Amino acid sequence: MEVSYKELMPQIDTLIFDVDGVLTNGMVTVFPDGQLVRQMNIKDGYALKTAVDAGYKVCIISGGSNEAVRTRLQGLGLTDIFLGAHDKIKQYYQIIDKYNLLPENVLYMGDDVPDYPVMELVGFPCAPQDAATEIKEVSKYISPKKGGEGCVRDVIEQIMRVQGKWKGKFYAKFD
Image (cartoon, rainbow, N blue to C red; front, side, top):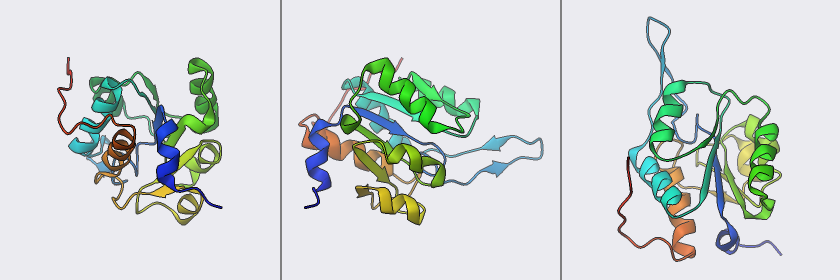
C-alpha cells in the first residue's frame, strides 16, 4: 500500500533543492554582455530562511554556476551550496556523510532529468507542478505551484506545519 506524502513529512530534517526550474522558473535572461540573470521568488526565499532558522539542514545542488545565486542563498543563511554540480550524486553523498543523515529523512526537490538519480535515493522526492514527466513519476509529492512560483515555499510550509513548527509568524534573523 502506497504511503501518503503527509506520512513522510514528520521525519524530514534535511531539505535539498535544485535551483533552475525549482527556485527559478527555469528561464534565463541573456544580456548583450553575456550575463545570465535568473528570478527567484521572495516567498520561497523567506521559507528557506525560516527553515534554516528552525534548524533544518537546507542545501542546494545545482548544475548552474551563477555566483549571484550563491550570494542570494548565503544571504538566507544557507551554507551547503553546490553549484556547477553535473554529477549531483557526488554532492548528495557529501551532504549525507557530512551530517551522518539517513536518506529517509531527506527531501529533494528537482524538476528535470539531471535530478533523477538523487531523487531515487531520498525518502521524499518532490517536484514543482511543471517538472519533466520522468521527475513527476519518481516524485512522492508534486507541488501545485510551478518552479519559481512558490513550490519551495509550498513544500517547506507543509513540512513545518506537519511537524508543528509553522506558527504563522516568524522573526527571521537576517544579518
